[in-house]
View (cartoon, one colour):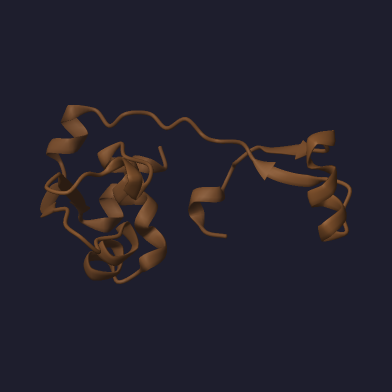
Length: 112
């Protein structure tokens, strides 16, 4: 599932409120990844990266930016994490989004 799921805790969900959903899927429970809490990037680390600024406009998606700058759309989460905006719903038209480069350095900061 990619490196963002490494070392992630799982929670087993067998809550009654989901019984109808479980029945429709032929299961009795579902495992969920626990939502991680990511550390902020220190200013000294931000300075060590280049930032390509992108002004958010209609049709923009994190995966499109990741594909353009990293050659891998599955790394969309790195841009979201770096900007502390977990989904596109947190970005408004006209907002500046920073794409951290080089990729290997940005990933190493995330994986500390």
